[in-house]
Length: 108
Image (cartoon, rainbow, N blue to C red; front, side, top):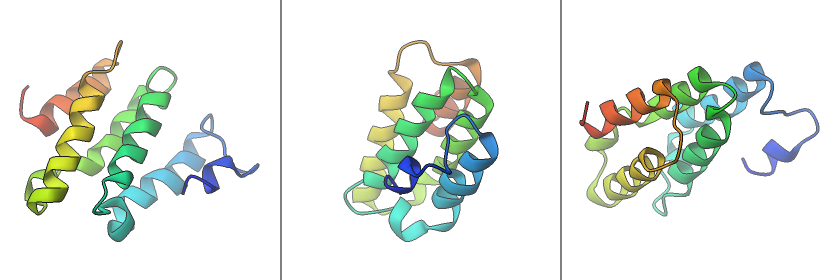
């Protein structure tokens, strides 16, 4: 996934490309999104934080992939929660991203 984001045909500035590549990855590639090392969770949070200032709605949509993190097995659940808490701790989050992260963490 990281290599695909550096391809010349991909741009974070193009919401359709982000949805087609990144959002599709988080929603349909459960094996890699839910990797035992947490790299899939970190990848989505990293992209969402990069997008937040320019396209908060799209960033929030990416983070909605975490809506069922509480149902994961304990190791993955811990890693998903850590990724969400990292997002929550970021400076200057948009209202959209803050809402999704707070809902996911259960602290609305």
